Image (tube, rainbow, N blue to C red; front, side, top):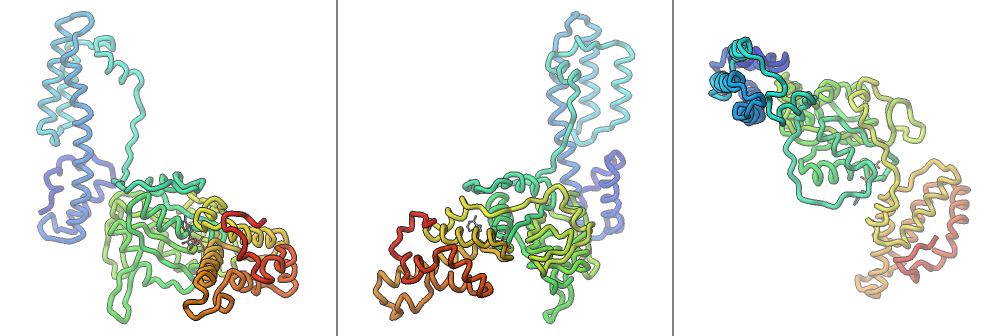
Length: 434
Ligand SMILES: Nc1ncnc2c1ncn2[C@@H]1O[C@H](COP(=O)(O)OP(=O)(O)OP(=O)(O)O)[C@@H](O)[C@H]1O
Ligand SMILES: [Mg+2]
């Protein structure tokens, strides 16, 4: 039932974390006698880990041993050759069955052989000489298996770095103005396309409740939290608009986000049930600001605890407007150039407002609808001017400014020349207006 039992003899050689996990399984299963769901899940993880480690040791070392034992010693000494043979035999005896390495007796056997004969570096085969003298630094990655269909690399400067970060188990924070494409980047481009993983999103606001994060009682009985679900099933947890969350509620994320990198780490839900981490769990947060202070432009964002922000340190990316992507998505340079002009005018006049890709899409869709109606000569019974148009989209956008601001914006974008009599309808969509 518990497969880790057969590696009991190896546990004392493992790191503290592994030993702790072994102890936990032993405890939860009453000494491996009862079937406990958490213990079984932990058991599977730990067994896989140990098998992977021992397998890779054997895979790496065995060819080297054989090579050494077969290599001709340079000085032709029989003693050295014999020593090699003895060493090989000793290693074979003490590492077979492969998973049953007894470190102490192996060490004794090697010491015994080397007592009788000295082996110099030059006695070793060339490949091994190189390996010994360059003494490589050993590193170990714990990458989850990632298999995805090929897709076009997005024109986003930090794209590969963000994907690497998520793969390395770092929590990522994407910061950028409204409608710059952060949510789309996190959910679709990174989680779905680059990593081929499912995602689960918490839309953070001041009303986000603990039940959504760690579960709790609802009208339908106990509902599991999204953090717990992502954690235990290996989804990418998207904390959309994280800075808007109440800092006290955000505290519930601290423990888990500190352990995103720790294989098999345990967290607890609202019922104090424990959940081991699935190796594919990852977390991407988005926000309009980096919430280390209060924001004037983005008022609903809260200053967050530094301990929460620390969970993302080293992996914060600022996403800015990206004309290449915008034009690619819009497929309409005429509409894009008008939107871009309004955006730069707002910037120039220092008005506190955003013009996002979302608005651009809205304006483009409006334009397509009105042009369709004109082409079909009101087949749907609606005159183009009565329905949604590029002009009405721009009007709606500008109407959110004060009267003085509206006048200034309109002057700067030559509103009357473009929109007075729907002049833009005669412009080609492949050319910029500005
Ligand atoms: N690479 C892309 N390809 C296609 N559509 C995209 C892409 N990036 C963003 N979009 C679209 O642009 C719009 C804005 O993107 P998104 O909602 O991701 O922005 P955001 O930065 O999260 O905005 P907010 O801060 O307001 O939440 C959405 O309609 C989205 O579908
Ligand atoms: Mg968003």
